[in-house]
Length: 207
Ligand SMILES: Nc1nc2c(ncn2[C@@H]2O[C@H](COP(=O)(O)OP(=O)(O)O)[C@@H](O)[C@H]2O)c(=O)[nH]1
Ligand SMILES: [Mg+2]
Image 1 (tube, helix red, strand yellow):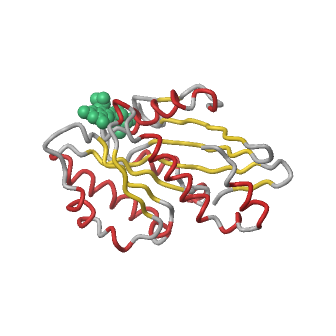
Image 2 (cartoon, helix red, strand yellow):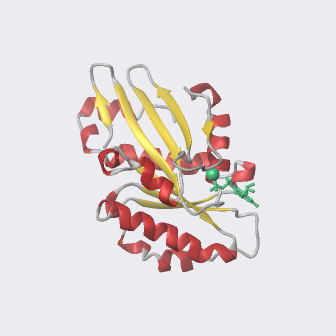
């Protein structure tokens, strides 16, 4: 859940890039960190190797601001077991949105489906409602996965708060629109943001 501190006028949110290994999560986050260079509060943290119990994830803290409110967005990327490591039950309540990066390489079809089902298994009913953006990455390749086949395989029509986008992460194409789609879903879906002043202010946050 988004944490809103009206005294400090700060909104905290947490977004996770999920999807199978090699789908393009790290590439996407690297582009994000370069694009939002002036809004990045930390050094881009990317831990590329797993050894024993060492965590394997990318982390970025972005800071958007308008005259009155600050939106601090914690962005992670992770895969499979590593996803569970950073989203243990005590922190799962803090998860505001998932950007699922699909590997559009044709052979990766089932790995995408398995990865989606892992999320579903872990998040259970919450997964139906959590804001989600499915990004079909690697649009530069051919042949690629049929979007509708993947959406049918995961039974996409049963989900709420789901948007579909495309990207070519190696060129940065579609990365920012997908991220903005996520932030909009989060801001629109948060009931804590209903008081009129916040409603007004959130529109002014430039993302
Ligand atoms: N052709 C193509 N390759 C991509 C694209 N995005 C990422 N890759 C490549 O896919 C591989 C895995 O990317 P990476 O970001 O490390 O995947 P991650 O495991 O999900 O973090 C790398 O070799 C990337 O250069 C894309 O849009 N098109
Ligand atoms: Mg990675």
